[in-house]
Length: 375
Ligand code: IPM
Ligand code: MG
Image (tube, rainbow, N blue to C red):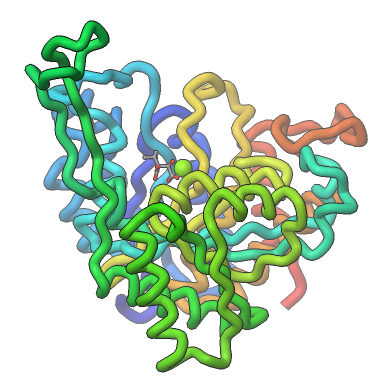
């Protein structure tokens, strides 16, 4: 990083990706002007767009562009066009998993915070949403996503008639150091928050979860005994998230559990379109909304750009140490919501028809408000 310039690698990807990326660039332009920072951008291909152009979901040039940037901003990848169950065909998701692994981004932080203006947009009754403000720390480069997997043919007893057929498996594997470093991330984060960590596993069944639990406790007792540590089974957590979500401060969990629980938790905020994320590790950090590429609404100017803008907020904080700018962006988003502006996904019975806006108009509103926010 140099002086007053920050170089951002943009990965717009597929579906609604390019539309929400445009809103992020727009907001960053205003932030740069106001806070004396020049943002430069370089776009690269990832996912389905990369498969179409190069045959690979993660071209070498994309990895090089990401490595050479001060931060990576990724929108979304995937779509029915590239859906296949054929293991020999490239899939967009391989690009996403590949870049996470290649950049060593083992810690995925997903804040779940309710904007008070959106209490009515959640599918839960407002009374259950009191105090919802949690951080899901998802392990991102291990577990089921990256363990040994295969499909084998000619396996006796695998076919429905009992004869030779196909068998497939995926493996959940964790090493001590992988558990230790993600637990440390969670304990560190809890110290800056309300000092509580729920470590979520399936230790009543899975060996990898039993190791997870041992390592988390060992680290806790040695270095973080000031933080409250609670073990919780993943099925119970899925229930507790709906029963009493206000009990959670930091949740730390393995890759697949974190994937599932974070989609569930997003609904507390009204929409998956509100959930941002930061993926941190040893090298360049990557920021992306937690939602997918929503191919069904791509190109229609109806997608919610707020998760993308909230991801930009995380980038300003974690990669650029621009806390004042991040605060201005956050308060810009809060003002727009408090004024009643809504994209379709977060609209409710209370939304005035004239305040229902599209992707670009929502981006404009946030950009105007952040430029006007008091400092
Ligand atoms: C996410 C997404 C990805 C994941 C998919 C698109 C591979 O669901 O970031 O949560 O499973 O990690
Ligand atoms: Mg997911």
